[in-house]
Length: 304
Image 1 (cartoon, rainbow, N blue to C red):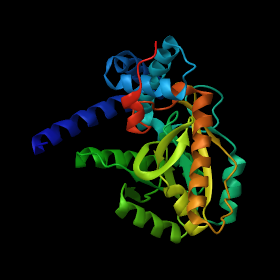
Image 2 (image 1 turned 45 degrees about the vertical axis):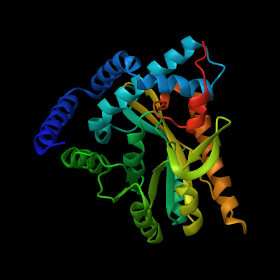
Image 3 (image 1 turned 90 degrees about the vertical axis):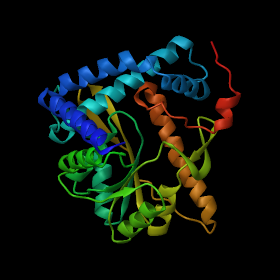
Image 4 (image 1 turned 90 degrees about the horizontal axis):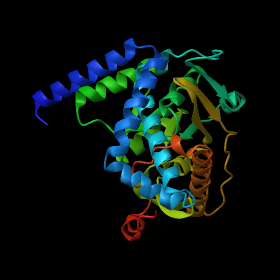
């Protein structure tokens, strides 16, 4: 992109985010969901979502898959539109926009250990909620990110995330350089966040919905190397901008003498947990990327 194109794109992003920020959180969420679920299913990428559903949940009918794809787009639209509001949502409100935590005792227990913690989640519900909520429990964590191609847009996104967390924590780029920086961060008793549900071609092969899926092993590798606790959790959407962070009991994996087997076992355990979350509410997951090995897509036929 040219410099002029970058500036134009950044201006559009500022206007959109500014407009969403002016709206009440519930209105912004409803608007984003409505637009996304209307337009999204018409886009070619929705065919990928349908293929994913055929592989992961073959018991679904075509109409059920279509509804799940609409729900996926609805959740994505709401998540984007809620982004400028996440840091401002209030805790434990009786109704309307706000957030609460189920399993807060697990966060407190993990914090009390004094050990480095890896917070593992996926693109479920409003995944942007987990960092600011955990930060409010006194455990702000660094995380990996894929930088936007437009540096100005990238800085806008970073600024919103820092504002939501109320802390300036590191953001590590995906790749070997970011992995080394993340390891150094953990070695200093820092905490790390990982969204581990996307395909990683240079990862390891684990199972997801009974099919081979190349999966990032960083969470397992880092936890074993630095004796870190793993706290898994996901965000459940209970209404427009009404969000619940569901936290599971920490995973304190006991290593064996076979490090590679340990990495695979722990990675599979995380995939199994991710699958449980998705099965609870399929439309809350981001089905829009090719999660499984390419041969599965090449060989499959569309099921009516």
